[in-house]
Length: 209
Image (tube, rainbow, N blue to C red; front, side):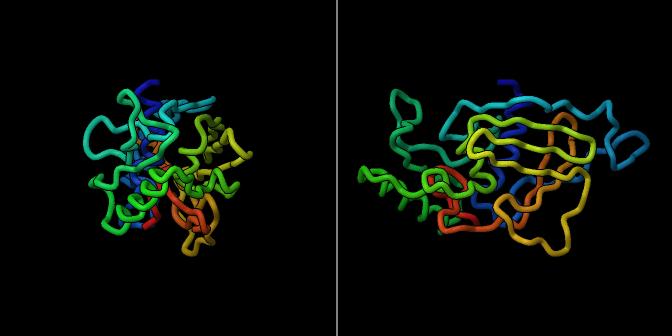
C-alpha cells in the first residue's frame, strides 16, 4: 500500500483513540492555494477516487514516527492474533480510564469469551470504528464533498469540504465531518458522534473520551 493511502487511513483513525477532545481527527490550518487563498487549487488536490483497502485487521497501520494506535498483545509468530483480541492497555496514547476499559476487554478475551462490539452486535459502527470493521471502502470525490461508501452494511459517510461545523450539531452515528487538503493528505475533522451501548473507537474496546 502506498504511503499516500496509509496516511489517509491513519488520519481518520489514529488521532481519535482516547483523544482529549471530542473531535475525531487531527485538525490544522487549511492548505493554501495560489495567492494565499484558503481554497486549494484543482492542480493541488490529490485524486482519492476509487476503491481503497487496508490489510492489517484488526490493527491500524502504525504512523511513520511517534506513538501509534492500540495494537494486539496477543501474537502468533509475531503477527496479531485475530482470534484473540487483547488490546495493549499500556499504550501511551490512552488515558488511565481508557486503559482500564481496554484491559477489561482483554481479560474477557483471555477467558475465551467474545465481548460485544458494534460489528458483532449489528450496531452502527461510527467513527473511527468503521475503519476497523471494514477492510474496504470506495471514495467518491467531488469539489465540495467526499462520499465514503464502506463495504459492510451499506454504511455511508459524507464529508463537506472547506466548511465549518454547524454551531449546534445533532449527534449521529457518523457525526458531522468536514475536510480539507494539506498537500497530498485529506484531513477530516468529525464531531457530534452519537454514542451507543456498544460504542468503541477500535476492536479492542477503546472508549470515546
